[in-house]
Length: 105
Image (cartoon, rainbow, N blue to C red; front, side, top):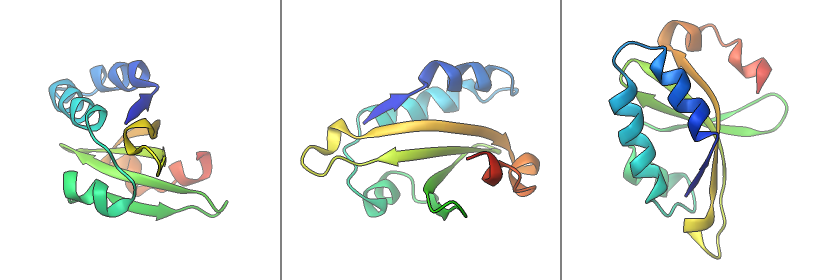
């Protein structure tokens, strides 16, 4: 999978104490993945969730330590390794629980 806005994610992770190594591990895992659907994602990250937004789009939420990573994923069925993961938000649990991120995505 190709991660879009990887540098933005790394910059966000640097502002949250101690989570940079976990984010780097997540990136490495995702970049070597070949996902075609939610089942494939959950085979890699069993706590990943699919969230349907009011606008009709969907995003995927990953737990990274005590943070939530929100990403849009565009699958490429004919070649799963060419799918794209778009980084949307990297939030603390408290920020995530406010649900204001849903209005921004």
